[in-house]
Image (cartoon, rainbow, N blue to C red; front, side):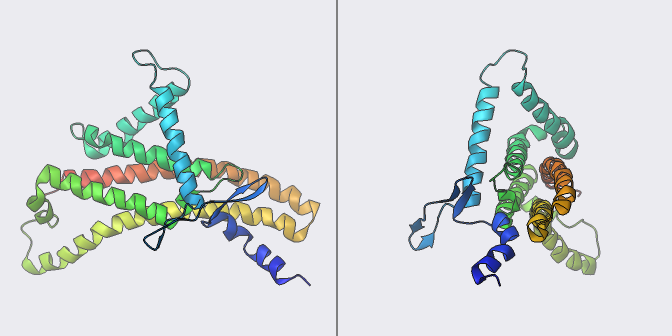
Length: 266
């Protein structure tokens, strides 16, 4: 009969690799991260915090290298970065925010896109961890989009006009009274949808991969491995595509919400 510890390890195999934790997984075992407290609050560096910092560091180095040589036609890695930047500008920012206003919000949209993309791919690296599979991380990103949306609306329309124009003019008073709470709920439901969509999609793929691989250790049969490994590889390739799509979807919806706030229907 298996001991309680062994049973617990088998039971928690999937969640251990998905949830946040105080240590890093490595081929040499678990590396414990420092535990920190400030004024009684736990501000410890966790696994997902570490990989967010790593994503930020990778992006800083990548963009520094790709922009180091200015004034020439980009090639290689710099050309790939420029292609993504141009794609976000022409296919995401301009159509949704407008020809005149999109430049102001390009830095935010590019930051969100590349940060989410890097975090997604870091979770597919062996011994890596997906920070965007943490609902706190996706909620923070959604909050940034929410604040950017409200600020953009108030800058372009004025503080009073922006909030006044949330509800269309000329409607009967009963309809207006009904629409006011609906519009207010809509302001918060949009970033909530962003948060849950990214979190759920990034979590689901990892759960499926780990569950299929877990069948090999559960049944301990070569026949199961012969089927599970090709399926896992196929889902892994699909996850690479999903990592890119989810970064694109989050960025596109952020641009849509900003564009709706900037160009209100009076």
